[in-house]
Length: 303
Image (cartoon, rainbow, N blue to C red; front, side, top):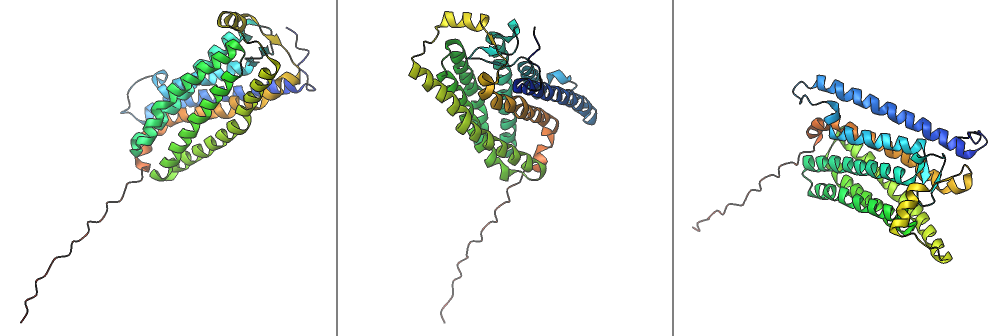
């Protein structure tokens, strides 16, 4: 395996080193979070004696963090079939499978946290949106696999549109929850809503239009798409190793954000499991409305 491309004059090499460093930091944060979960059991003697691995939010986060670390070490662009390293682990079949499991875990984290917030705040809107998150992302993953197998970017347009719509509704739910909490909880919910707003803007103005433009360009050139059998064989056996910046240029922005800020979001969601028992104390209680006094009729006798 040649490493001649690992040179500071190569932008792809610099980007890959950045991904490695971010992944190392993310794994260190995951281990730190694991330690906090262990110590929290000592802080709460009444808590169930379950091991750290039975905490759903942490387990889901671990899968997502490690999945993103794997994809950072071996980056690839699925439809284009490009990769940095010539190994079967760089095949789209392996990489897309890892990504699918990781992304479903990330979606499940959001569903759990949003439902818990909605339950404490007695918000049917938040709870209903939470229930729709995982089914919607399952549909997005199906669209992603359609794009990967057929090499048709229209599948990516649908996939990323579904992600955008999902987080748009999550942002709406969080915005409605902000006034129902106070203190640190209110600040955290507001910060999450602001982050999601930035994500939705990025997806709507950069990511989805990028895939839409690729789809339109392929239509203009009359590209032939792969069928199911040929496509499955292709994703399992073909990858093109390239270290040139040109084919990677459009992938660098979203991958860098995905493997950094998205993972940090997953870690924050896992941290919610450490403080969720404190949530009710930050719930804003509705003031009881005063009972209105009804006027009492007084009969006046005429003299």
